[in-house]
Image 1: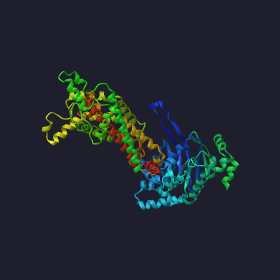
Image 2: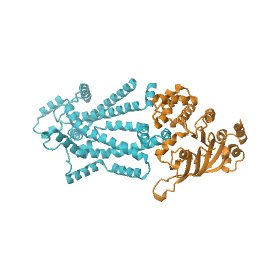
Image 3: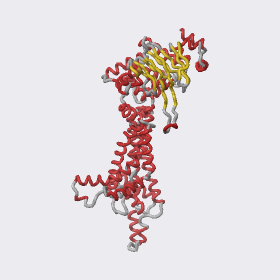
Image 4: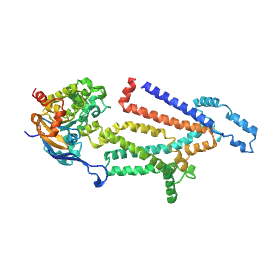
Amino acid sequence: MEPVIRVENLVKRHAGRGFGRRAPGFTAVDSVSFSILPGTTLALVGESGSGKSSLALCLACLERVTAGQIWFEGRDLAALEEKELRAVRPKLQLVFQDPANSLNPRWAVGKIVAEPLLVQARIAKRERDARAAQVLERVGLSAEYLERRPQELSGGQRQRVAIARALILEPKLLILDEVLSALDCSIQAQIANLLVELQRTYGLAYLFVTHDLRMAAHLADEIAVMSRGKIVEQGAAEKILRHARCEETKSLLGAASLAPEAIAAVRER
Amino acid sequence: MTRFLVRRLAHAAFLLLGVSLLAFLFSTLAPGNYFDEMRLNPQISAERLSALRAEYQVDRPMAVRYARWASALLHGDLGFSFAYNTPVAPLLWTRARNTLLLTGTATVLVWILALPLGVWSAERLGRPADVALSWATAVLLIIPDLTLALGLLVLAVRSEWLPTGGMVSVGFDGFSAAHKIRDVALHMVLPVTVLVAAALPVLLRHVRAAVAEALEVPFLRAAEGHGISRRRLLYRYALAAAAHPLIALFGFSLGTLLSGSLLVEVVMSWPGLGPFLLEAILARDLYVVIGGVLLSTLFLVTGNFVADLLLYWADPRIRSEAAGR
């Protein structure tokens, strides 16, 4: 099967501040390669500062990459101009970590969810509203939420709104950047299950960025462990859990709140 | 909304009352008054002097004078000028009009320049173009207004391109309408340039900082991810998200319309409030000074009030907060 996205030798170097050669810069992502098949999830796991969020921003085309290729729909996104990117963006959506600041507090939920349609195409307001109501229902929120403002919602409801906004453009790939970390434990499980369900319905591919190996094991088919900008270990979720080779993976396993055996049990359920 | 308005208006009235009381108090505490200097004039007899003092009621206690002045104010009467021997209000109004012509033009120009330049700079934050602009505004910021004004005057005198003072040329009354407008506009160039140069760096930096901060907010990055055009992102989304500090600044720039150009007016001999109030203070022309102070305060209060209304209109969060209370 043809992968949805194929990343080859991606490098993201942040320019240093200051003048000339005095500023060495900082390599956030260092020659990373992977691919994701349709309807599957790749979890990108790493400690904070390991470069996983930089990578997510690069894939969402919110940061320009320094080198390497991002093959998506037969085109190399890294080489596209901003204008050409506009046509590709709908197929590849990013959901942010904290819905408290990723939703415009001045707008009602209906406008927030319909906004990508407004940006992308000329669609009548009535149809935009209908589509917004539809997609809200898909994430488990009734149409009465259309008129609410984000600050009237709970954290879980806000993240549902953020997911609905990403879904309305009918993407093929969702980049989920720590989408569960800002939520309470019980809500985390609900949203995680919603994500699994949406994946089954729409055949979405996920790039699930997290520092939580337990959640990664629950959601992902494949896990890539990142450390200091590089992928240090990559493979099927079970394999990584049972036979972790790298020190980094082992330390992440230690940090996870469940023992490996328990995680495997969760996975097989 | 009504409660919000009433609260704001009450606040403004209270402030004006306080300022007028303080202005009165300080002018009473200050040594001497307009008539003390007359004593030195051998042509004015002691009887005439005490008659004048009684006529203008400067011999009465402060509380009585304040009460009379305040009750007159309620009828739109700002008192009497000792030096000009006419009511204060029309005098102030003519001068205020000239000042507003100057500051109004400068304020409009500053905003027209600062908004696009600030957005442009924020968009390329930290890149060479932005750094260069930052240095330029920093240089402009550290040159004192007075130096700038004097420097421009020297240039104007040397080059003879522009008139170097006042508001109109000799023989103004005989000019045609178009010629009159051209003449005033030419006289405005130098003072307006100084005012713009003084206000631009501060405003530009605020716009730049506010927009740069807004561009980092995840919901703007999300819009970017939806494929929004660059222009729409910057001017519709980022400026709206950055509106809060900018509206407050706008209110402040409205508020300083009457008081912001006093120094420049004195240096450039613009017939506005600046030279007029300076002269009144030196002559201890009591009611002119108090009237001037009160008028400036009124503008400051109105400016803030307008900013509050704009914020209320621009930000639904303030609206729901005000409604909830």
